[in-house]
Image 1 (cartoon, rainbow, N blue to C red):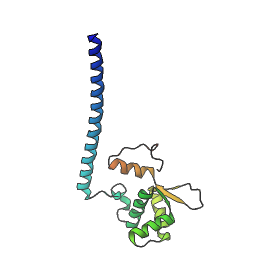
Image 2 (image 1 turned 90 degrees about the horizontal axis):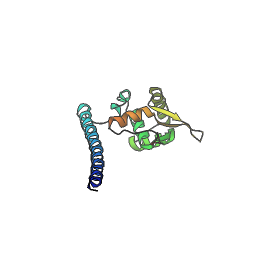
Image 3 (image 1 turned 60 degrees about the vertical axis):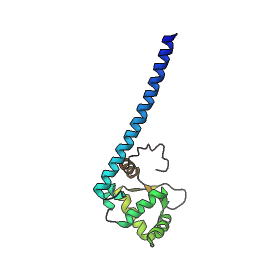
Image 4 (image 1 turned 135 degrees about the vertical axis):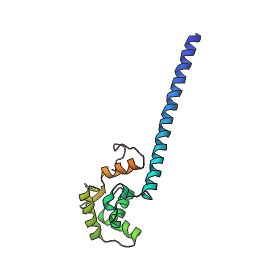
Length: 147
């Protein structure tokens, strides 16, 4: 009987050790992500979407549209324009439409099917994945229905 008790205790200790290893791996990943963020912050002076999409670095309207789409997940031209007016003080639907076409050509945004007659836009999965990788958040898109 003592051998059975000893074997059970060893098994319980192994389970506890495996759980501790998994926790340590998670903490280690988080620490690595944090250090990577600090390095990016030190190198670029901040964490901005243009680190992931350098093509929009000198285009404040395009950068703001990308930020709006990060916040809203998906939106049509009118919704984006309304949000830009709130953030920047002014915005034109024609300008937003033109910038969305440019961003679409760059592969930053994509047009998604919509029930109504208007066009709806969302960030491309590639951009979202790059951003999440940058900040150290691995995500599977099966879990994120918005993207």
